[in-house]
Length: 145
Image 1 (cartoon, rainbow, N blue to C red):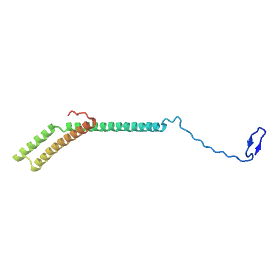
Image 2 (image 1 turned 180 degrees about the horizontal axis):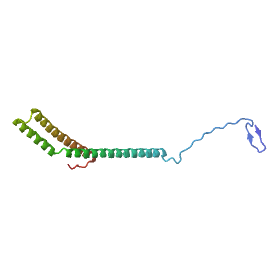
Image 3 (image 1 turned 90 degrees about the horizontal axis):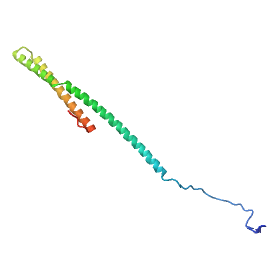
């Protein structure tokens, strides 16, 4: 050992010295920032899903309203007056057929026409009631028929 002029002792003045260390950051101001951002992201996503659902619902209601209006117009077009007129023509042709003034083919044709008008009336009314039922289910509002 050697002594220096200040009186201190040095153990090995020619020895190499090594040092080691590591840095660690401590989250002093984290305050759960990752989960907050994740929650904001989920909220934004859910908001978009709700908006998309509202747009789809509005489009569905518009489609059902149009379908209802068309069915109502069709039901009004095929009226009971047309059915009564077809029945009157059928009956007149039947009486004429019995008297010998009309052929069997004309009678059968009149009966077919009457059934076609009756079928059209039943079909349009059924379409109208189906459209009204679907619109009522979609909106929750009772449809006046």
